[in-house]
Image (cartoon, rainbow, N blue to C red; front, top):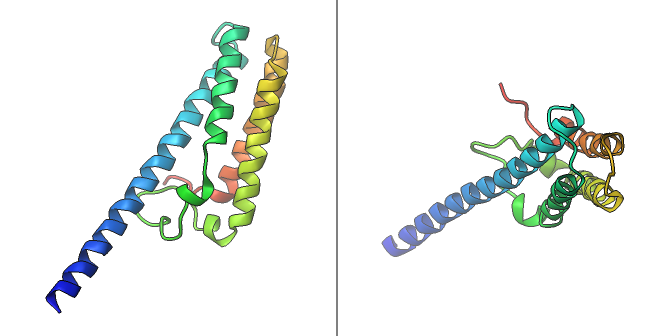
Length: 145
């Protein structure tokens, strides 16, 4: 009986650690997105000079970030608790969440394929990316208090 209780305790602890790891992994992915979008926003706002090669590199990195986002792996059942900004709405409407992520992926692909040649073209692409980010955050992210 003691071995059974010990085994259950070890499994429970392992599941808890795994949930914490997945939360950290998805937070890291989202922080990477934020930094990349932030670097593009500086160009759009005129805080940084437009450099077509650097812009395209950032857009390609955003696309790669979106492509490596595995919703099933990063948002498993039970990972909605603890220190996370993920809204329970993700698990209530997983199909809607996946659709929002797909919309973001398509926006990043379109932006990198367009390879903006100037700030005005970049503004349009960053606007589409920002709209998909904002829409997802509005529905599927808890606001910090």
